[in-house]
Length: 240
Image (cartoon, rainbow, N blue to C red; front, side, top):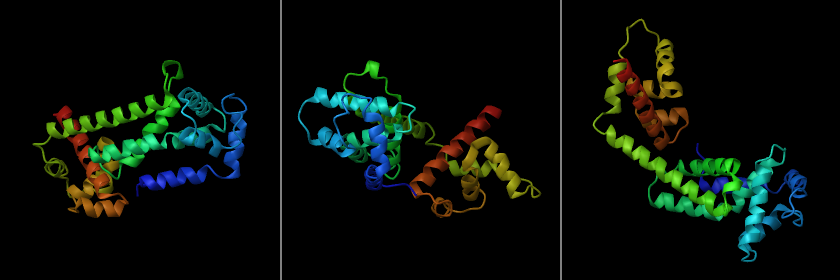
């Protein structure tokens, strides 16, 4: 079951308090002059969220955290967690705007934003960035909007095709074909969602019922089913 936005924040907060987290912070703060005078992670976050209006100083702190998060040291995960918490007000604003604009499925947005933020922090090229926080947040929101626009475009292109009809037409099998063999054959085409598609198209279950069976949300089940049947249709067209 997907984590809620609140649960993700609670997990990040809880993971930043143990003694091991403090030790990891101590391990990298000495290597960065803009962090070395802070005695604990909470002091860093307090400065970033409630400190002075010296934006240059805050940007230097964020840059140091990015460098630590991109390192190969064992403390990199600590720096990543601190960066996510430092960016949380901006990430929260993106979450609220995305929900208001109905970008994607609401229950999938938390993990999508978290994943994009993590990737942005790990991959940011500091040599090409002046404002760390603004750049990361702008890129995340831009990418979410672009992904939504691509999904809308795909749905419009295939709006005249019923995924159920596509899959039912394909999965006519010989009586001697075992369910296991059929699933293996379908999996070779559409991957891990073969069981989801077969349970709906062949066995006649609703997507809601299969969502419960597979431990998915209804929205996630519907989205994965649509993607899988699109992959199947594309494979059929190539082989036609």
